Image (cartoon, rainbow, N blue to C red):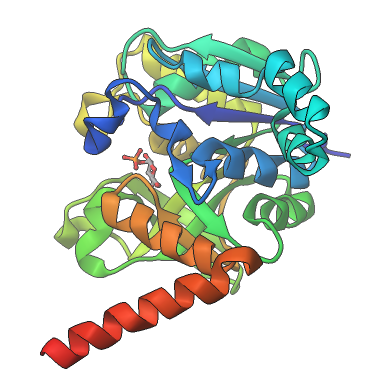
Length: 300
Ligand code: G1P
């Protein structure tokens, strides 16, 4: 019997330069979709999938993230005094069991592979998940849960996958498909950020992974051998690709809508979409959007 996946790594060390000046003083992961920071969506998804240990790979200037998941005694006391039980209840989603969350610093920005490698001692010899909080996925069944269910049938490495426009392949890890089984595809090659004419397909890796500890071993070896990949960084994609002829790699076409919250346009789309999905905002917001579009059309 393979081990259950109970640990997840959240690489959150990035500088978030695309969102400057906002990210001058707040971590990108604390930026808010409606009323919840990006990181909350990632944590909720992980919890729903049965993750019990949360490993954050952070960097200088990210202490607001640590505070977010800490108890807030003064705030809680004043809410209690004011009888605001609904708000107290809301705060519960930010509570972490003592010892369930760990923070590791990535001292230098040497790549996503390096960030995951930084968490190696906490992961030890277990399968683990990686969640990139920039990729927000709205789904009836949370994406990571869909993946864990599929992973339990194979026990092999698995990456979330989605078709992207051909001219966008340079922004992603791209899969070369051996066998297409619908939801699941067996992978025979993986390339990080290929040029358009070198991309083996338009099936892109999205920021959810379930990995075997062997991938950590590969990262370790690649690091020792100075085997860097795209952008001169230690790439996670490369360490996973090394398992194609080992423990195997699958792509998983999840059901759901993915928003690229690492870009401004994607962040705005997610904001609109999540606001429309909120019962308390839906009517007013939809009316506003209709008016806005109507006014634009009339002006044309
Ligand atoms: C990372 C991965 C890439 C993947 C992407 C998904 O790239 O390296 O393989 O396709 O996330 O969002 P990044 O967006 O960090 O450059």
